Length: 480
Ligand code: GLN
Image (cartoon, rainbow, N blue to C red; front, side, top):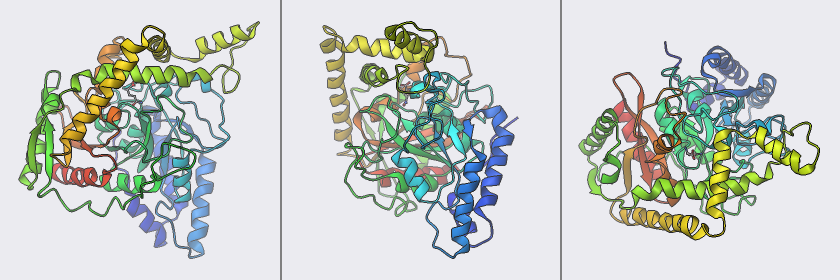
């Protein structure tokens, strides 16, 4: 049994509405019906607000009726990961500690989508505070992979990937700190984009690790993902790390093909631990790029082996600081029956956070503590620098780098639940780009014998999303 369905493309929805062939209301209704039908099994959504979505759609229809020029996402349903805020709507971040919290403000990326005419059917399930690789750390239950319901969708943006794969919405927003967009995109057979750090504002994103967190799109095609990135990208006075560089037209070069491009294949990403079927799918994809005229070059990113430990030091250190704000006073859940303020803090955090979040807060506090700071945190920052230099050097010789997105196809729900280290290793090919700040995309590139999707990761220079979309579009066309 499969719950997979192709979502309609963004361009076709917008064109049909602009031509008066369909109403935005009809599009929203069919999206809400599809959610009602498929989500009982997939559990991608944590909240659905039918009335709100229909009201947004009606306002698009009114504008169309007046003959107004419609914006680029007019009437296009887009799901939002529940770590991003939309004023007045739940934002649980997959955690019990934010139960009942209704943020008083809207994330910049979400606001930009709304201004471009998007319709929001609801908020999407994810690992608690985006910590995880399987969506099993959600306090509200796991998401099921639409390709095989007993498998994980990947994480932490599991709901965002599964909602697109199940044809519930044409696109979603997710976040990626160490792989949380690319890895679930790979597991669910959709496109997922890690924009360059600074390309998309983080304002209104519930923070996990601020030097690594990024907001990016999922979609059914490279073209649709490029459309959504074009809408959400750009400088924002509310995020001092957002870049002033102008946002190019990401679709301009999409169909130019890869002839003459130099594409690097790093030996370190095809070593021990890579599943044989994933290897052969990715190698097959690389051969097709070569046949199209790309120059394939063997490269080395020599510090790759240190990336997982460096990531889990830096990410947990930042998380321990960011998550200090959840104390039962300011947001969401407060533990009942505590006699003193200190006891209330303790009980709220004890009952409100799940096991993985607690593990990270403990680890992060430890690596920042006096006497261990130099041994762990400073060392990890040095490794981060070396990893970045590996990439900068490689990009002197090649225009893009291709690798598997994840070492295996989607694993079974429960399979790694008791083994955090093996779970952390699911991010082995994705955390490097996170630490280096460069951009990446995961594009479907074949399937396993069991029919599970396999994703190719394409990495590009800082702010060079146009190039990875161009390669991604070629991979998509060649694997169709
Ligand atoms: N799986 C990684 C982690 O658990 C990455 C998560 C993410 O990118 N948000 O930290």
